[in-house]
Length: 245
Ligand code: PEP
Image 1 (cartoon, rainbow, N blue to C red):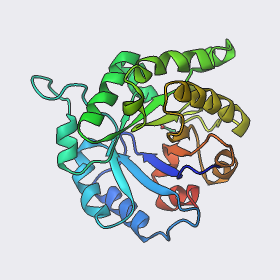
Image 2: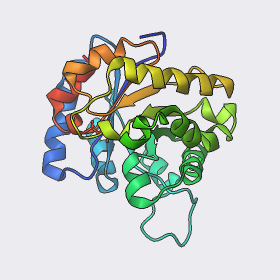
Image 3: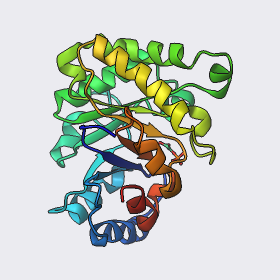
C-alpha cells in the first residue's frame, strides 16, 4: 500500500462469447464500487472491444486490449493497430503477456516496440514481465526481469512514466500457485528500483498470477504492489469485484 492509486485489471484471455460477456459486464456494472477506491479494468478479446465499450460507457470501469501491433498500419494480416484501438476509446493494451512471449515468440524488443506503438495512440501499455520456474529456481528471477525491461527503459523516462508494469511469474499464472506477498514484493522492489534509476520510479506495478479475493489483500499490503492483473478470477463478476473490495 502506498499513495499510488490501485488498479485491478482483468485479462479474459480467449474466453467468452456475446452472451457470457453481457452477463459478466452487467455484473461488473451492477457491483457496488469498492471501498478501497481501486479502479477496475478489463482486457477483452478484440472482437468484443465494442461490446465492452458499449456496456461500460458512463461507468468508472475501463477496458483495453490483450495485445497491439508494433506497426502503425499496412500489410500485417491479422494484426490490430493502436489507432484502430483508440478509434473505440481503448485505454489499455497488455503487451508482452507471458503467453504471447512463449506461444508467439515475442521478444523483449518487440514488446518494447508494442509499448511504444500503444503510447503513440494514447493507449497505456501494461508491460508484462516475469520469470519461469526454472529461472526462479536458478536464482535468475531479477536478472530475467531486468533483461525483459531493458528495451522498455531505453524508451526513456517520459515514455515509461506513461506505462504500467505487471509482474507475472510464469509459474504462478493459471496454476493456483500464487507468489507469496514477500516473494512478489522482493521482485516489485527490484522493478521499482530499475524504474527509478530510469526516472520513472512512481508508476503502477501490478502483480499477476492466481490472484483471487482470498490472497489479494495481503499482496496489496506490500509497499510496491499497486494492484493486480487477474486471469481466471476475472471471468466471474463477483470474484473479480471482490479482489478490488
Ligand atoms: C494472467 O494471465 O495474466 C493471469 C494472472 O492469470 P491467472 O490470474 O489465471 O493466474
